[in-house]
Image (cartoon, rainbow, N blue to C red; front, top):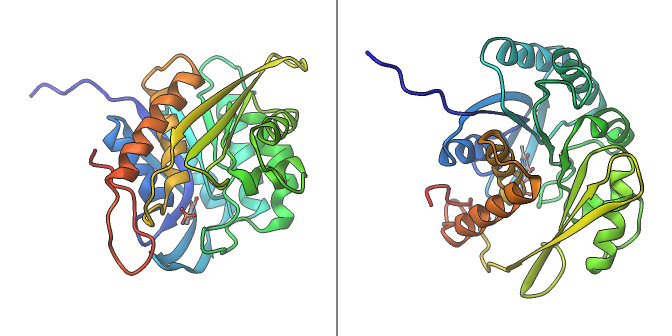
Length: 279
Ligand code: PLP
């Protein structure tokens, strides 16, 4: 028997959604749909469905680290997406284990890491306990290549009251990048209007210079948006694992994928249904 060529390996470090629409489940579906081999390190379990989250159970931080060492040590990774981390102990465990495995960001073999700073579900359930925010900012942010906050998350990370337009998104992206990640994508879906703007800021080394790219796409009207943020960040990681040379290109391709998956989303259960990954 001949074995087929190994696909790119994409890892998600995130929480489980029992309803299958967001979290680890959305990430693995995205990885497979985009032709990569998906690995998972589970940071928390949620009991949820299309109506919302009704419970969260934590995973021991040391067991999170153990999963990470197990998959990286044997299988290896070409890109990593990080989602729900739940609390500061898990954040510390993930940060120290990534550093032990790969060295500082920029070391040879260091994989691209995309961090979706999940804080609340759309149904307003807390997915990161608020006192853990400083740990996310100081310990994890410097390890990542790209951070993908939505507007409410960007407001918290940049400590600003209200972001209402593209100018505000640009200012927040630059502020968040100062905390140490290489690039920030502020997603504008929470603002009103038929056009959605996402703003990418890429830092120029350690200096104050840097480059903005504004992505523009039409709003897709559907109630079935559960897992959109998870899907976008895992799609970006999948395109980086497949060797897309620039974050900008990976974001454009991931956004096109999310748009198609939203257009094909379907009703299931009684609430906000999932995206359709078979597009
Ligand atoms: N559950 C988990 C485990 C998640 O990671 C997320 C989002 O990142 C959600 C739920 C919330 O998904 P949504 O806000 O799209 O409903």
